[in-house]
Length: 117
Image (cartoon, rainbow, N blue to C red):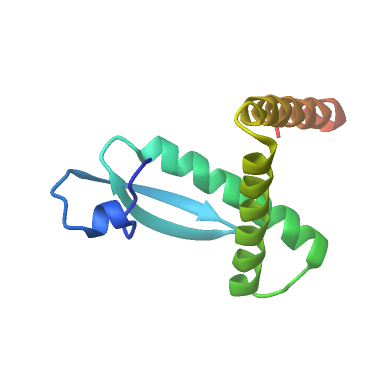
């Protein structure tokens, strides 16, 4: 598991090199510390959170940042629980489906207006 600033692994006082990454979630910019070398992983995770936040905000309108982030956390927790309930092999299938869905959305965006969404 990757250790991020504030996680138990980082807060135990372990002496390890720390990296930094700046991410944007729902038009808010955050600079976060992480284990050196984990910057791209943290950026990718933040992109997932951003995608969920933007989708919810588009559907629900203005609900406040704290409530929006709570709803995103609940959605992600629900997805994690679903994966655990499906069993060990289900994660690979879900990842493949997610990749195909993102590719389809990008292709639709390109077809609609030449944008690389």
